[in-house]
Image (cartoon, rainbow, N blue to C red; front, side):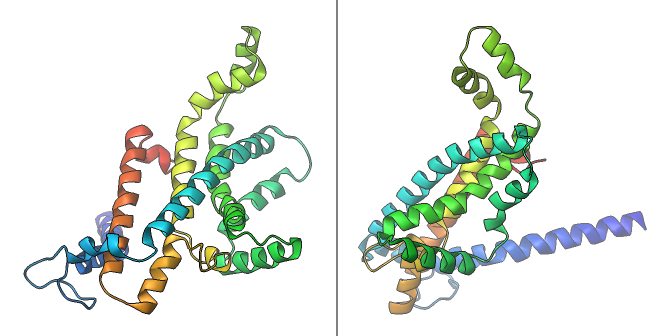
Length: 263
């Protein structure tokens, strides 16, 4: 029975891996097809769709906007998330657990619900600038990843090290920078990487906050599908998949996949 259970578990694991990776493999295959329709290559492969990427109208503007918003939102979230995580872990005020749940609640709500709520809120306060709206919204997107990883890291951190550093002459900010930040660097890297990817790939919230002149990369790809659907979109998607893989490899080299996954 034990061997049977292990066999079933391995079969289920293999099926889950195939189910998750099959769309990515198909997308990469379609991007190498010489055909103008979405189909896998039969025989020879072609790089024509990758060569067409630089000529896509509005692509580079959307890429630059997406990377700028993701980078700024990640940096802001790391600062705010660190302070929030310290308050949650070290604080003794009432409602601490409720606040901790509230900080990660964007992960529990559908993106469309958050997008509509933010659109109405920004209109109510008179915020019309799409770039500022995107930045605020993407901070909300990234913050839960940072808070979750830093809360886990801080729960294992010995704050007596901060007191020891202060007795040796360091100020409290200097002790935090020289003692706590290096120890929690895996949490910073993990939260920052996953938050950056979540911001870069976000569609359901960003769609409510963009306009004709400010489109993030996922929204721009959707426009291409509606206007001129061809495997160029698959080629761009494959590059995004490759970027994600590179980020995971960097995270593995810097932190380790086990620590990134919280194992």
